[in-house]
Image 1 (tube, rainbow, N blue to C red):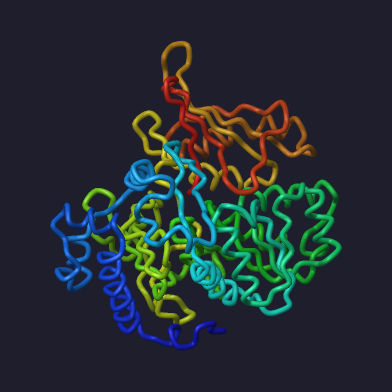
Image 2 (spheres, helix red, strand yellow):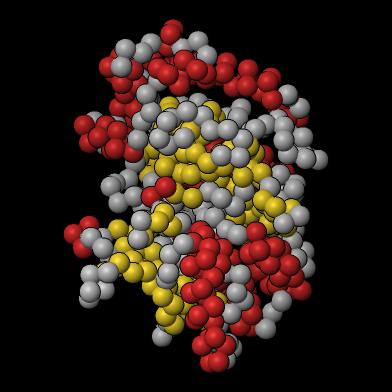
Length: 458
């Protein structure tokens, strides 16, 4: 096991919690004295840092904030909001969220010190996944040097590690593959949907990725859930281990990463370790707001206590994950974890015929079929006023007509069995959209006055 931060990674879970609480307590005191947004918010709730004597009091007394709270603050205190916490002259730049919830974009200022911290959030996970000085790392996230904190912070992390980084996110797929063949990457960063696209493009060329890119050691994924069979299939095709990370603009970079184990082992999901010395993460039941138990699902509540500007305390991310306690991974690290492969958005969920339907559950069926290249889903009312779900499937070009015909009832039966809702299968008559970062495969047309796009990420 290769430790990046030997001191922190050698702590016991209890010692790590003590360090985390000490940093959090200092951060609360600092914000109350220096940040008008939090001082007004906590005063309105009758909360003072002196009352917060432990994690239970923190959860009881410190209010949860949401996206609308931050947007209101920006509107009332333009342009950055009062929570920015530093003078504008101290800012080295600004990030904003992608606005995929449909209600606006949050702004996040960062200082020069923050940019270093953002990079540090990536160095741990990249190092665990085998990235070393001089390694050729192909970053296919779009907008790598731009206004989204996630890709930009990875750039900084790679610089800190001294990796030889190729930022090809804005290049067309054909150019990406040409550069990859020329320089033979040792690591690749992408999202599951685009890895699917790269795989299909290789197949169209008659390439077997593990033979064309023999030096590839790891692929790190982000932003989407995926199935175990899909991950194992990708590992077989590409000849390397699949890894995963979770991060957000709100955090300013990475929050959790898989270790040497990878994201899947022995046909089981592995763990994404939380960087608990950099953030305070709660995983709470969305209804009771109590901490979930081991193996249970909950919402990620984020407190980023290691940044100077635009600090966040108890921000409800709307991200759904599965909690695992510290010290339970075979790597022996003390960090609590998310279950890999399962990060999703609560607002991804579609209610169809009174059944909660998650796109990831549908994709766990569809993408186990090698014949399927891409799909789109829509929920609507038919002419009789009945609610229906339609999956439009794009098959790979070499799939014969008789196989396509046979797949229709097979897919309809399997999806109904797994998901609990009948979905009509239709064949695409042209190529469906491809995605490199933010996946948008579903539309809900049941309320025409406020059509909403699902399956998006922060």
